[in-house]
Length: 397
Image (tube, rainbow, N blue to C red):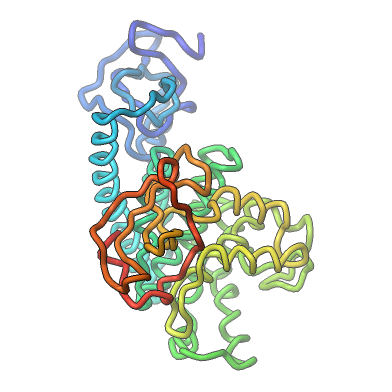
């Protein structure tokens, strides 16, 4: 039996090769095509698992009705955008922002629920996290810009929730950049979402202390990884990659990390990636005891931690992946306007589209303007942190 049999706009493929977004119209039963009543796009990995568990080996997929990101469609070369296309892109971005907010809130609600249940001693169920991970992957594959802008909005009191989601999102983005397969991305995302779950058992006074921890308090904080090991052991269906991401993000290449003091080759690539992503997101977040750092300043610290703590080649790849001025970050332009890096897809790092809303020169808000640095005579002067402004940029995201 052939792995791929085409028929007009449909293709027969093995269940093992199904991806999210593929539109299944029929199943193959004893070499006969059987139409199904609930034809539609695959929205979760659970749907694929159910097909496999039903001993279905092949299905028929409608290519035209499948999503652009599922891997079946050839992407046409991008045309030079005119006015109608520019308008379409704006509408699409607005819809993506709404979708990204919904996904972020869904993920925060799930993590909050699981943290509460874990505190009560209940076992973690992997399925819901895999569903969120799949949506996150789909968002990154379509266009990560919208999610980057939404995730740039930080609230100090929700750090644990937002940090976990951002680490997962950054791992997926970084993994895509490194051309890792979808299944690995999913497992890394689940590990990222769960990577700080052990903190649910850390003393709240230490967890939220506004000042520097004493040596004794830091030793207690480090126990969150010991607690995580215990939680991971009770979690059924959690892959080794997910466990590694969760349990290795405080390890160091020179063996001086924790909880196991792993060294060199004992740290696989996804473990090394989790170390980089965790530090970057923590540095660029506002906490009760510190202000958020600009991405450029955080990159300097990441580089300073190589090669003894972090993998040097991976750090430079991460910087290339994120960009010196990531979408969602604040920048000052050469005319002293301040704006949010809004779009960077298919652009070099120095020429994004910037959403300007404030003038440092005149110390006042300006009309909100989208500035395309490919077409303007101005440039980015520097990246800035939110704390450097006298105003709150949140309403402009």
